[in-house]
Length: 587
Image 1 (cartoon, one colour):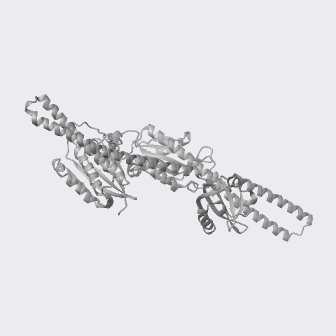
Image 2 (cartoon, helix red, strand yellow):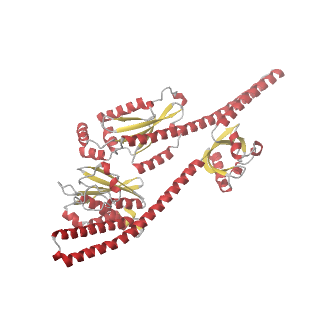
Image 3 (cartoon, rainbow, N blue to C red):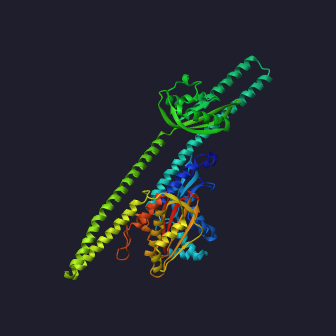
């Protein structure tokens, strides 16, 4: 698709040549791991430049079936036709999934598209997708499992995300536009110098072969000088229009040509810069690095570097410099530009300071919880002791109502004690009481099963561990606690109509081990997915299910202490799957 009124010949370079795709992909991968929101970046030749979070329900079902794939193409055609109507466009395909898209426009040309998809605006109509599975001949169970993994984003969340993606599209376009102008300017410099060399050589041959009068030669020489001056003025205008500071260096790293902005930024005059070494514009700590990168340009053809750009007054600012090797009249030179990146450095520094402040705050909160929990248990033991003494000493003299009150007091003290113990467990996570060491994952799961053996037997539960499990670097106590909590939850929230069945497996995904604990219990409404990992958040009354509401918060803290992530997929009435991603520090 092309933006309205765009000239296809005005964009002769690929979009991937104009932007740093690797940097964009890394940033979007971090965004996905933090939010679970997917993206895709696709150019107009349908090349996928970046993408993460694409759903199995689309790639393994809709796209591989001829009839359902036709629906996907209808969605793509609609988005392509309406993409120019606003900063972004959204569409629900006939297969039931949502896709949003924002165009990247450079010089009036549609060069790429940022997609948000696939996702749902609300919890899926399982029965409708079940009918769709039967219609297209999908394996119904696998199809519904893939459906359960599809993220749910409200219209407000999708709109907010697309506002961000639309801004990213503008940033990519601006970056690409600047890069395109820079490349075109470099091409023009090389072209003009090539033309100049060709014209001079041609004119020299003409003068050697022609036998014309001296007046004609003088006149023609004046014409050539005029042409050279006009071309020089044109090249100079291009140089002055480049962003940042422009420079042309000889093989010794001395300045041959520069733009006016170079003098403004450094404070050096034209007379001072002429023949001066480029190294004199850098702090001493960066001079060796800059010298190496200059040498790399003449050896390899191009190079980049970040360094402190110092002016005449000695003050420095961080700059990003590029260098490209060019030949003028057969002599190699380095040409390039430098861009001020101080704002980017300041943003990174501010982010680091905020992160350190949060870490300090978390440490203080953990210490407070640890101390407060210990102090709370002492009065609880006293309450339980005296209430028990009261019951034993005056039990025969108390009426039924008084005995009931005593029972309430004992139950409350016991529940408070359990709550304090769970709070203590939560505060201990990450306090390094047990060092991390190589742990056999299967052995840790077996230990957790052994601790729950009686509950497993009473519930007639099956706990299946599939495949070969790796050895990982972990805190053994915390890892056992993690699986004990997850298996215990599956037993507690069992479905009344069937015995519990818990399946545990592990897959290698890039640089992580992804462990899943799946059950066939009562399930969790997706709207509570975020809430269940918070401290003291219960979805059921104590009359129905015992507990303090800390177990999953402890799981989340243990996983994050190990540098990992935990998330949940669930279908009410069918079951729940908790997924844990841990870094592969030990194979």
